[in-house]
Image (cartoon, rainbow over all chains, first blue to last red; front, side):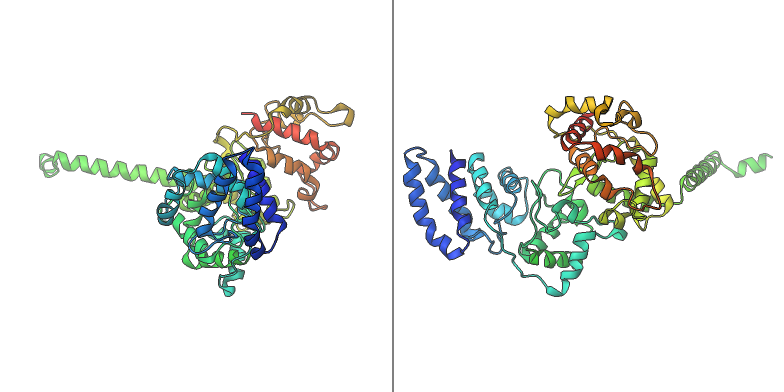
Length: 222
Length: 222
């Protein structure tokens, strides 16, 4: 029930491309949805809007991210869902996760997590464009080809040619420089995001300069 | 005599024997390593870790944006030939060319041998309803379409032989992709035909659904 509802939400958002219009329309759309679904799905409409607003408070109304919260727009559905689960189970344990997301997901039902994942994954992402332009080429080379001499794998193999991600492998393209840099550093600092990812082994080989180059490149990827 | 023996206590003699035997053991260990190949233990371990970052710690394969094949239990000759094929551009793959192009022949040999004895469970995940049809194609071929039984070259248990690869347990999306793109990825130097030529008439005749069926079947074989 709630799935149908959130898909209707997302469609209404997809059709309108302009941020301001979306914001203005949200309330009227919500009202229409609440009215039209209230009789059939008394719980869903209200719960959905509240859950979305709880996220956008930090992640931004169009979910493009707001430091330190990463952009969620266009993030992979399965990734959002698995991370929400990992926050609530305390598997993902970096400081900001503990500070913000453990609490945010403490009472989140799997059904609502599923709906939120569908909603945010279908919003159009915008590139943060906030890295160092001078490091872009170096970062691109590492991303696309890896560094065989240093035994560092090419990111492209799992994260895709445009860093769009797939399934539980996240989109990286267009995320904010500071977020990417922090997360890349955390793999080597003993923090976790999922139970058995290949990332700690790969990212802990990266130097600060290489991380900054990768984060710069990725922040510009559309 | 008694003067000599009294000048060496029992303890001193035992120490001498211990030291000598340790030296002998060390010498044997070092010469055995040196004979195996000219690859240092440290470089080999680092390079194996590099393979495992993408192909999995047991070489079980990984579903990234691109499917990363299982190497576990793979034929040594096949792996060696493929690593050389990447370098010589007989097989097109930018990432693997970059990985392989600076490996010494001794390292290629050592890496190719390494995965032979790994035997993790197949990753699974292929459509199970295709397995029966796939088994039939694998064992009997498709006589009407002049498609030879896969078992003829890859063996009844799909474990392969020499340059014919093991298919048992190979991840589903990789086999589908490989068979679909065969003529654009393998045997790319006309003047230098390799084993891949054997597969050309087969992939030419296989339909999409036949490819999916046979890929599903082999992906579940232990």
